[in-house]
Image (cartoon, rainbow, N blue to C red; front, side, top):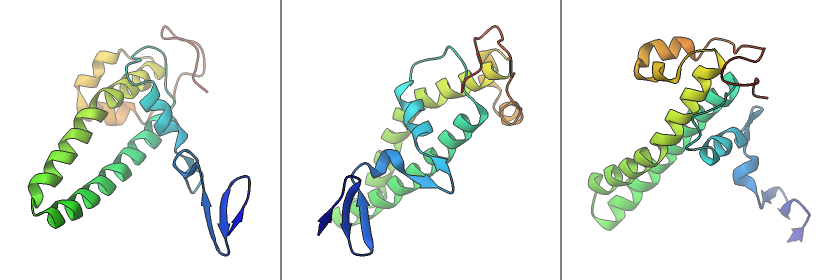
Length: 143
């Protein structure tokens, strides 16, 4: 095997050592997901539309992967759906606060109060609006 600065290169198989943070899907950078997780309890400031929707995309991807892996492991261990449900519940509880925080920051980006987060269907419309390009009461635009 050949070793390069970026990772391990074995013929046509190239494995980056930091694949998790460098994962790209058609130009979608997973760093937005990591950024939202790092700012898990920050309900101040602003998040761009791209940051919010990429967080949602990777949250769905991670949920599906966890569901599949937990389902297989649960079947092998003989616990079946109970194990899968427990693991999915733990992930859902763990991602609840970061999801609310990025949603509130997204609402701040369009000039709305974070309390609008309690109106779920209206938020889907708000989250599609372009952010305020100028400084608003919640701070400077996020880049």
